[in-house]
Amino acid sequence: MTNSDGRDRDTEDLLHQIVLCGPDCCDVSAVHWTLEDRLARNDELKTSSAQPQKPRKGRTMKFIAMNRFKVRKGSEADFEQVWLNREVHLDKVPGFMSFHLLRGPERDDHILYSSHTIWASEDAFSAWTRSEAFRAAHRDAGGNKPLYDGHPEFEGFTVLQEIGQ
Image (cartoon, rainbow, N blue to C red):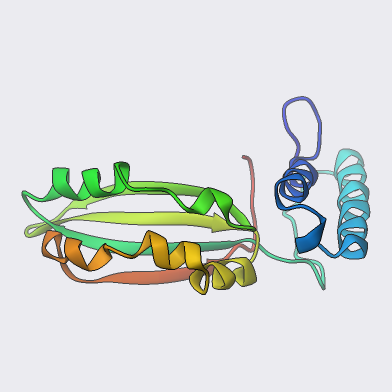
């Protein structure tokens, strides 16, 4: 994918991650290979018709982690405030790319919400779930149980294709 100025966005994301993360968390030879591969792919895309990207062997695929919450009617504002006013720990975690809090359809007894995170890989997401930052982020989660029905439903997805930004 390229930005409006023609630069390869995946390469920029990787470079940004290296700058944030530092050399201690990266295998420099793997980073060099990945950058070379992405630059070559960028050149290929410029000269070929726009075809869907196919995963290449050895390439790390992005991972999307979602938790669905069935928020009880009348608890929407409280649920949203919990999320909007929480201490954020994700932005310091290697491999984290973005977070979205989504409000979905209204049902008879609840409103569907989803937390949606994008990770550089499933391994990065798994490392987050074992981190101190994860424990800190979920420390008070049990206190919010009265706001929703049942347990949050986790869904994890490997990104097979990405078009656009």
